[in-house]
Image (cartoon, rainbow, N blue to C red; front, side):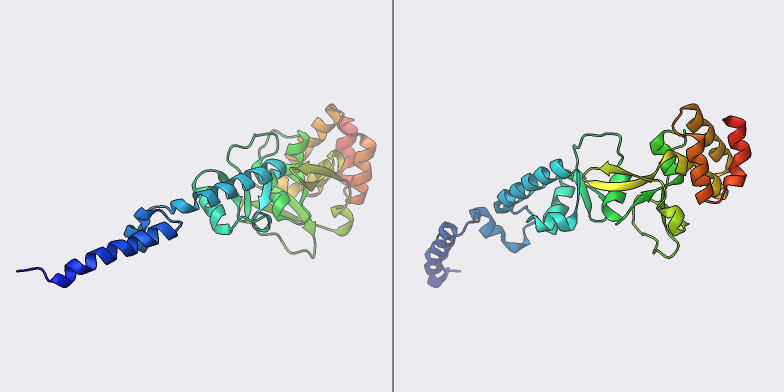
Length: 248
């Protein structure tokens, strides 16, 4: 069957049209043939992704951890953050909290970084505070945080939280500031932490409270006067007096 002449006439125009599009388009010529059904990466966006990765690395090296909204404000799109996580350049610690994959590990674990970023006024207490003060051999799976009696309990996907409610007087007593990256968290001091263990002995156990009291006095991390000061504030002075007299 003879090929229609019109088909031969259309060939030069088709090639001319493709050539013109190739010259004036910033995309590689091969993608003009593949079309929108191609599953290959958009190579012409590699420069943009490279700039986003360099900017994210610079910001995270300075801050340690950042929220997604802060990275977006710096000019990095959320889709670019997702691609950087998939490429292994960034790590998503929790919802909206990112850090570098090759960050240097220190004594501040990732859970504290997330708490410092996600919670407005984080206060560590009880087992988490004992761990930071080196007064327990336990490694609690949950992070113990204290809030007011009428405060809304924080909800984050990770790390798991153990929320303890306290009155306004005991909540703000004996707090120390600690820097986690570029954020500040509050931790109950040694004396207040030991007293809290006696006050909430039904949560942590009396054996943990006695161990913390013994270690705190043995290591001279606090004094009996400081312990009794916070014991009066927390209304457990009568309970702690016999144990304190026996160990002091």
